[in-house]
Image (cartoon, rainbow, N blue to C red; front, side, top):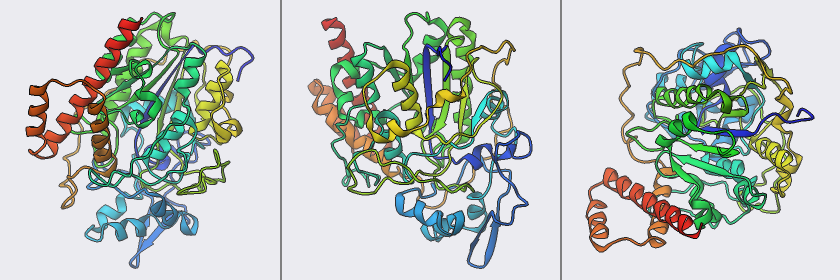
Length: 458
């Protein structure tokens, strides 16, 4: 980190379930030292049922299903120098075909992800940013917010078996509150961060804002009053899902990335004092060739895992006038972001993993760039025809159903009028669409009343 940190605002956009090779592997021969895909490397082969699957380009925009990424699956994928990905996938989806299995080894060719690849070419790619845990979405998202998941690594199983736990650990938002530092979370539909107990207090819940307000806020923001720390949660549910979680279309995520970056650079004063971090929570069962290193456990909690190894590499790009074009090869995980924030603003502790992490501040320069990078492109009219999903793959995945379950708690904490409540009960029996609509209403009611409460108390 420079002796005088030039960054006043940190904005984090965290998307879902894509590996580094899958998203940025296409730059293997184009960006020096990126360590991306290499179709000629004989070590990058997975075998299954007598067939070899090599790294290949031209990844699909829409996968036909959601590759597995729970702890037991990730450990299998890592067996034999990362050669267990395809075998794990075919074991999880025995009705899959060879083209489905090949997608696990494919990567998006250069330019196929227009916004992400534009940013990779013009800013700093972190080619050793690993997920914090070799496991699924929730545990890794808890690490980016708090540096721990309190010993939990398993994903919830569904509406009636939610496997929900009491995540009452201190978060970065609590630490920012202690220092009087302003923060905000923008959310697309049901924010996963509300699983953190402290976020349910009126003071914290009042800092949530709808995602569609973000670009408006960025355009009009006065750097003196804009939040110092902003976290962006994409929309997790169709229609309109932009989180990149398979089988959602990656082009929807490209639109979100481009809109956030382009709105930011249009506000020149804000851009000149901001670090935008684009990162993914975990690899989503998609191949990456780099074995994850050992890690410092965050605390004494080991109920479901020892937390002594990082997860797979994930795409991560640092975007700011204060970073160069190129690659940073320091070993980071999600707590490296927390390390930077705690050092920067002298925040209270967030666990042993955060304390031991390498700060992303090492990639910053004290002097701003003077070149004009310009706007990121939006996806053009080259969208592929979405493939038919594998049979039975349209249902909600475990994380989605558990978020719906969590909204029942929000409803119990919210004053809801009788007629509205009766209407919700009727829609809950109409299938997944009705359930999601009701869940989103619960979120809006809860957060809206929190904002009202915060306004009244001043």
